[in-house]
Length: 113
Image (cartoon, rainbow, N blue to C red; front, side, top):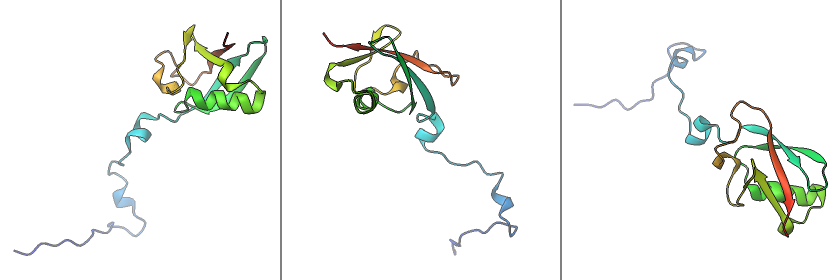
């Protein structure tokens, strides 16, 4: 018995024969864990600022960006989503109240006391 292990070529020159095959995606792609999202920050001084992030970004990334762009000290900044403290190692995806319809998420920023 002889096995033929040659790669199969598409039946047409333009490759359309393979279009009806399902595309394989990674878990990250399928779950869309890096979807773009606007983060609406309510800052301690009463002003607001929008950051464009992805849902896979961590609280640490957002706090570091606030430190660099807004001058808010990383170690003295806390983030809250719907009144609940956002722990630093977590990503935005880890919060069940995150909007899934593409609308902005509002994060309240407080100074540690």
